[in-house]
Image 1 (cartoon, rainbow, N blue to C red):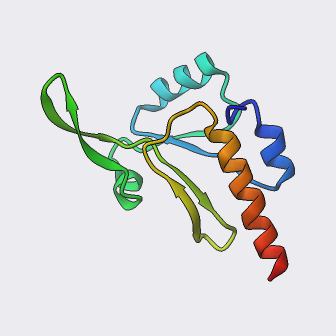
Image 2: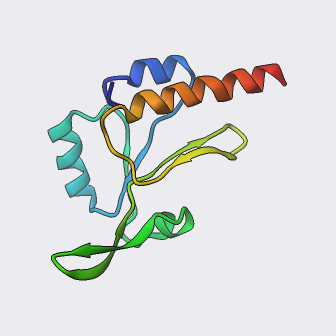
Length: 112
């Protein structure tokens, strides 16, 4: 299940899905349309949020070192605490792993 395919499941778990990109609103709109995203894709062209969450890293591109985004996911609770983070995310199976971690976090919250 990709995040867009599992949006209803996350919604039933009272979870808000957000994506964030350094791209422009137009580029994000095109990406969202192309992949059928059913959740907001926010813009951070000045990388303020990217820097705050520490997702910029040095990468090699065609033999040159450049700063790029380390695809990451953060599970943030209603009190704005980061409960879990995933770095260097690979898409296959990731949404399922996040959903399972969400269920664990919610169970921990219910248990006190």
